[in-house]
Image (cartoon, rainbow, N blue to C red; front, side, top):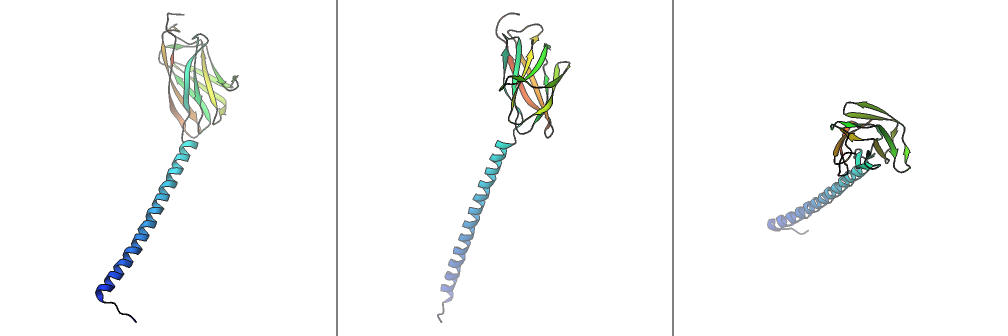
Amino acid sequence: MKYFSGKKLSVLIGATLLTSSTAIVGQAQVATENTLLSQRAIIETEMIEGNRPPSIAQAGILNSAQDHFFDVNVNAEPLNRLMVRCVTFHELDEVKVIDPATNEEIPHETNYGFEEFVVTFDEPIPVGQQIRIVMEGSTVRGVTTGIIVPYRIFGTSDVLGTIPLGTALVRGPRGGNS
């Protein structure tokens, strides 16, 4: 049997401990990096697949500025209702809800209030669909041109409740009264 001196034994034990702890730390770092990559993948997947509320896609004018519209993308949760506020003494003749892909009207009920209207869909609008809200005969104090009309839009779903979707700005063409 071979005997080591105290000094040699200390060096041997120190080298063994250093090698062992380096391997453990290296394994821990790999595990931590893998965990972070996994967490990042989960976060990115959830953001893509389900954490986006309905959103306003675009807004504008139709029918020689007689009608205003805005489009809503339905993301993550089916949409039951929209509430639209316009505080510019806005007047309109009728509200239509259209599927822009088929140009067919979507069944709904519209309730009008002071400076707002609420559109309740007969069936919830499914995730992945876009809808167009058309406000026919839109005027502000009788004017259709040279105006900017802000529409504050709120959406309601079973899971999200009622949340603000944003503001759609409709800019009429420059010119005088029509």
